[in-house]
Amino acid sequence: MHRKPLAAALALLSAALVLGGNVLLDAGWGSTLRSIADRVPSNPEIAMWAPAPEPGSRASSYAVATGAGANYVYLVDAADDRDNVRELQLIFFGRESDGEGWLEIEARGGSGVRYRACDAAEAPAAARGALDR
Image (tube, rainbow, N blue to C red; front, side, top):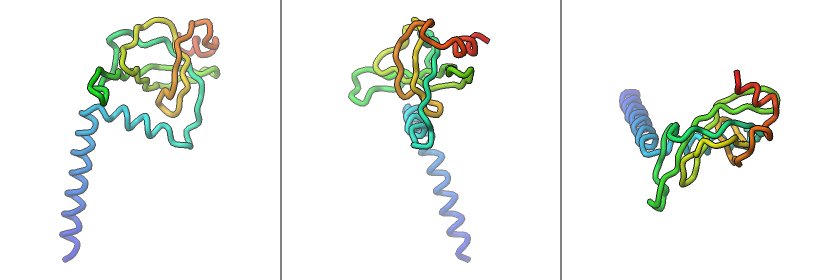
């Protein structure tokens, strides 16, 4: 007898979580949630390199909290100095990528925590080779 109300409550809770999750994703929170999840202590930070994303190739964008502009989310293939490649999410705050040069990225999980512009020659040969394949 008590199972029916419990099952109904669980079904309603599941539906609310799915709908609430979809609302967060539609509002641009998906990239933010991914970035937060990748920063858990069990994810070690690793140096990776990638060509700068092409202009207009962003995966998504979302408004800055102040309403004065937007942040742009890119998914890039990046490689480390041991020939390992993974897709990273990079957030360009307040501007789009210009597609110029390369990026040296401090990555955690699937997110670039910090990045800086660099020349292709600064990237290890193993990283450049892995991305040329």
